[in-house]
Image (tube, rainbow, N blue to C red; front, side):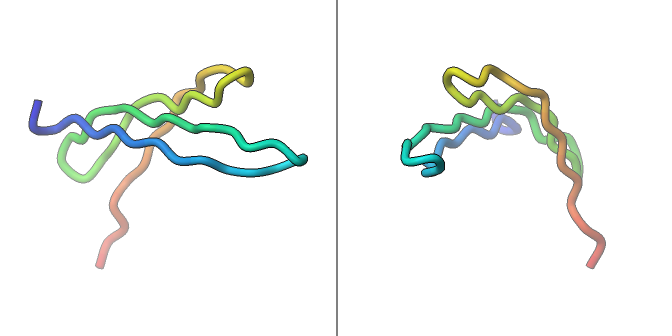
Amino acid sequence: MGNELSFSYEVSFGGNTNSIQVKGIITGDEFAGNMTMGQFGSFPMTAKRAAQ
């Protein structure tokens, strides 16, 4: 519960506006989840906090 992250945003390309949804889990300094791009489908994504 406390380590779940989800957000959405819109992007415009090719004259169309598309909604992007991201949902995943934060574990330590890493994020793993999926990005859903409407008709383009869903894709796995990962991220890692950069060292300071």
